[in-house]
Length: 68
Image (cartoon, rainbow, N blue to C red; front, side):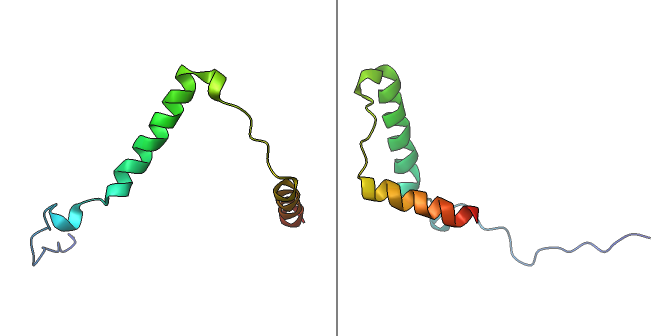
């Protein structure tokens, strides 16, 4: 016993204007790759960020609330 096959009434849409990516979908990975490449090439520029104590306390508090 064979199953019925369904045929498309309309042809598949071609990759045109509707299939294009926004500009930032390409720009963000390129920017991230460039930043990481710059860190690899010159690691002396990669300094640890000295965060505001209030932000670290807030993140610690959020972590405690999630852990409950």
